[in-house]
Length: 165
Image (cartoon, rainbow, N blue to C red):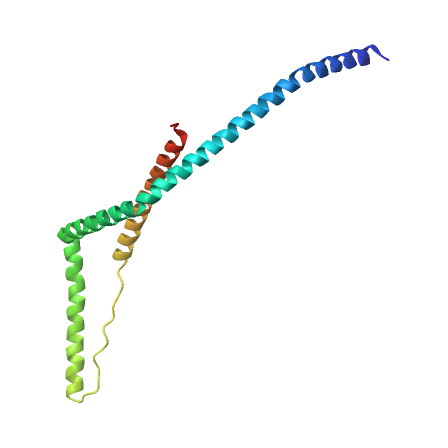
């Protein structure tokens, strides 16, 4: 056997001896970690169940409070909205369309009463993007607030789970 092979074999034997020496403590440490992780998982599961039971006792009250607050804010929104000059202008614009519809209807009725051929056109309504734009902006902002609230609820739950009694 060559000298290089002998040295490599001796080195391998020493390393195997060292590995065998640390194998048992390593296995014990891995087992201890697994046990600790299992215990933590069980503790969190128990706390999760406790939190969830408590939450289920109050969810209806919380949801009702959010609905009531939402109704209050909607009322405030409508009050503020109707005070806006651009809103007043939009309402006046739409009112003119309704007035035109009344004129067309009265003219159609007059032609009908007189037995004339109907020549007055039907009212055509055009949807305005402003309503869709406002609705979209409100929905996007509200969804972001709802997502932040969901994170807050999850954070509270996780803080509870992470705490010890």
